Image 1 (spheres, rainbow, N blue to C red):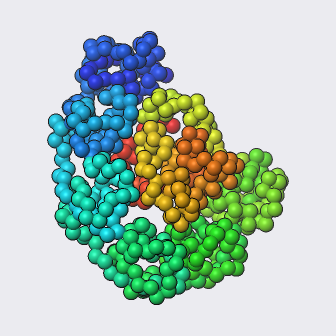
Image 2: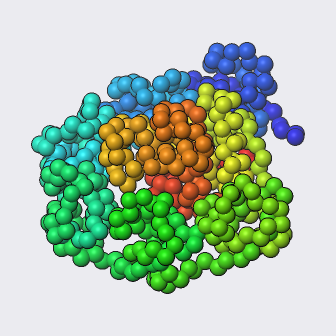
Length: 554
């Protein structure tokens, strides 16, 4: 490939990784092109050969002005990077930061000038006081003021996030909500417990955490609320106070192949809502013919009539249950139940299976050996270190084990078309700061005794907090992942074991369980994918940036 080479003069603050990103190169390409023996010892004024990417940055003139920023109380690497339109990896590389968790108040960092006027150490976020109310939690207060939990904890030097006290005064960012000064802006109303209600279900109904609901009502045993009991809840405008739900409930009869996740998706519910509404103790043991209460979303799917068309598919050479299920947007359990398969490892070439018609045109005897549907491009069979470098992942995280886990993950979960891989890697890039974080930074105590996550034992919250590049969370999800992979140590050891051994595969498992490939095959926007992954649009611009980079690489 004929790539024009130009000269670039090293500036103050430049690093090998930063220069490589600037010119669309990998670090290894830059090092090889200049015969650099020690990448940590480039000098200001040194002239390097770089590829001309049309940025006009050659000749020693950087196209991004660098200014100084003084770290403020509550600042984090992620927050500073977002403030100045940078990725976390760019900020880390520009300042040679060895530990992103140990920046100090008063530390001067080099940042790109994005015209925000936030340089020079002057924070653009006004700080006000907030007095802790009954039922408040770190997560709830952070959400109230548009902060991350880590920002709130750092701003107040909180050593144990689980031990804030009613009346304690915290520093928070002023987001114009008028919630400072100790006056809570959340109206409290009464709710009468209904048949089938659970703490987790009521909390979800009113936009609260379980710990907020428990604290607000001084509940000693969350498993012993009673029908007719009156609870204080936050008024979220749903009109659900007084025990009257604003969502119409209808009956649905479980069909062959149905799963909790599939039924929840069908009726626009979360799995936890469906489980709570029906007092389901074991989500894996619903029965064909069982009648479940569901929310009426106008799909006309109530009454036990499935709205998914069934077609025939003939097994091809190389087919597996997992591959066929992914091809038709089904779970493996749905495929097995729909065909009464006793041994999933013994399907035969030529065997005719019933599958759901997802419009892929893969039914009949053809298409069994074709590439996954999607954008029509050739399947991506392997991702390399160089490609991740170009997307923005630093060399420090690109170990052989990590790359092996990535490529096993892509193959296992059929994330192999250009769109599937671009959305998957771009979402993981944002969620993990380009691989710098393999587990959740918070302690995990907020997840303690979260029944919707399966955290039933003391210590389950921290042990099963978020792990992997799209954070797998909760004993229930860890157990399902362990069963799928066939590794009991996932449950035995918990978060650190998953973070070290399965950062990509755990993310791929989440991707698979949430049918993300099917979404990617519809050519969605990054925002649509982000809403499925994040539940909102947090970090959307960075996710779009990573998506665009990934599309260019593949």
